[in-house]
Length: 403
Image 1 (cartoon, rainbow, N blue to C red):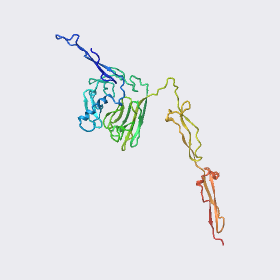
Image 2: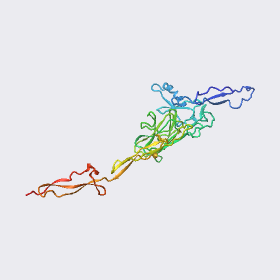
Image 3: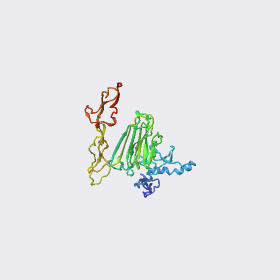
Image 4: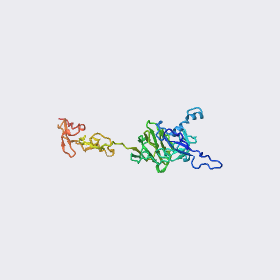
């Protein structure tokens, strides 16, 4: 065996070879050539690469052909090449198949990717001499290590927690479903179309942190399956025409994304579910867990003594030390307002007119004005609403002319 050759990558998991010659002694006079493998390979430089604007190694290989494309296709803007994953057969995964961004056509730009390139976004296997060989999440060929649901290599799933939710209603247009934070793993967002149809009227969309759309923006839909490279993370989208519309991720998010629903026309009620995993918050070794609860004060006096009034009280989330906190469950937050004094208010009541003060000529008449409670008790005039007080409880009257 000769010495190990140069590693195919400087970081991120490359491959190096060693070869042996059949020269001890060299076969002569019809002697058989040496048996067994002539070439061996192994993993090398498995440490993480510095962040290259979030680009994957396969993206870098596609982008290396951008300038070449400008020469090949003549004048005009250069073609921007991105990796094509969706629709590529397993036997072709180690070819450098790239598609033109924003145009859709694709080419095999190289018959083989660089050794050590991952075979696909959803696998830890790597390409060696154009063939996909098994490797672990530690980037070592033939290793059995796998990522757990938290995205930890060789982990047991204890370092993260699951977040899930659902949406069953939406107004026309774009509306946020959930913002998934950076570092989230094993993202799955799915919407089953109404009775298995291919046109539900509601579609999933993805918006980046800067407000630009990564998927299905500007009321333009991607109908076919595709893999979306975003800041070093690949998001697999089923296509809007699939009976089960779905978005999945295979590595931790480098930047947050917002999942939206786009509703058009007379859509059926959407049935969208999402799950993802985020790291648990670390506590120091001697940390004392703090328990938070809703603290309530006494109800205020009713805003009205009759009719419909309101009472208010202060409701705050506080920890065990009485300090303001934010970990209280919103689902069980006590009400801070309630209706009160829903009783009939005292009312004005006029009596019958008295006889005229004169038997002839012009006189006056009057009638009693009382403030009564709901049970008929006579109250002081101050108990009734002065704005509703009747004005005509004294009036003139004209009898026959006096002789």
